Length: 284
Image 1 (cartoon, rainbow, N blue to C red):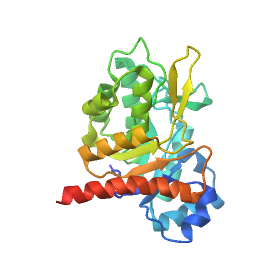
Image 2: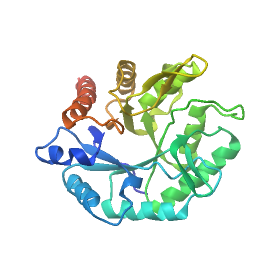
Image 3: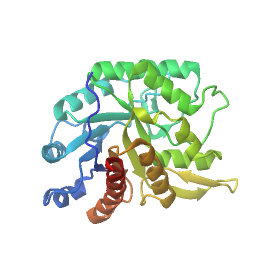
């Protein structure tokens, strides 16, 4: 089974409006990432741009629609389109979310949480196995950002994720912003989460911005919105992760209210500075 092989460097979410800015000069980046579902058409400029980028940089394809956490079978047509996309562009990495996003043929514009139980664990294992066998490669599984917790849950989230990796051999994608968001939302400690997380299985890290809102009870609620710069506490948490793991391929996600290319590039350079500093410390 082919494993994830992104370079130990920084990347950004590719947006078509940045294409000409990106290719006019070599960028201090190692890879770009795209959402699989945006490239399931047959051809045209999207695929041409992606191929041109992949000639210069590594490529990560990030799925948002497989519904790994659903109790229902995977959508075989969707999986077939994904396989065709992976075969066409041969990315260095493929990842998906621990979430569900479809039911009875209806797709929702959300990555919805699931209860952590032996039943849902069995379904998720079955789905990850099917994806990896179909694609002939390892999948990275991303930890979720959540806003509710289920009374039915009997397994702590980190143990649930570790068990999925144990049983399927999938790698992990650690979204540091998600760790921070859900810790704040549920009144837990992000460092406690990291202490229990199997960091040795992490092959990619995501960083993103979040929105700070007030819910209908008057309590603070953080939303994983991907429309603002990375918040300072998330940078600090990322610094802590990298200090524990050493440098790992790191992506800046910015999907809403997308800024001009220099702004996104500067965010990536912030992550690169942390990776470079840690690499120098490890070399001493």
